Amino acid sequence: KYAPYAVKAGVVVVDNTSYFRQNPDVPLVVPEVNAHALDAHNGIIACPNCSTIQMMVALEPVRQKWGLDRIIVSTYQAVSG
Image (tube, rainbow, N blue to C red; front, side):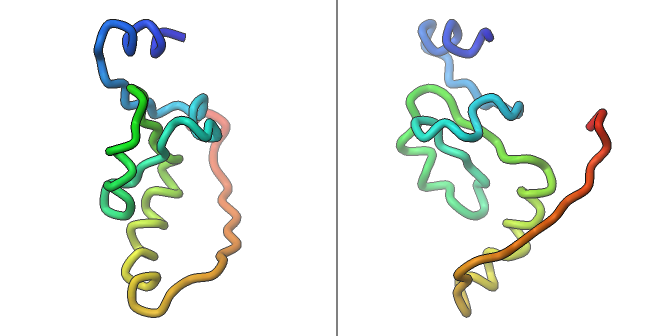
């Protein structure tokens, strides 16, 4: 709700909600994996879900060494968190 106002005021917003995660104009960043995506931000940077962050940090060395074409993951999380 307030992110666009902050961006207009010159603030870089790092958003941890799910609101911007599917927006193609907002980079979804895990710094250990794709910090280069920060260069293309338009004032808003999205953070993935906590389960996704941990998984990507663990899988990035595997991807770099052997490559990954696809992964299928199911996570089960509490409604409150």
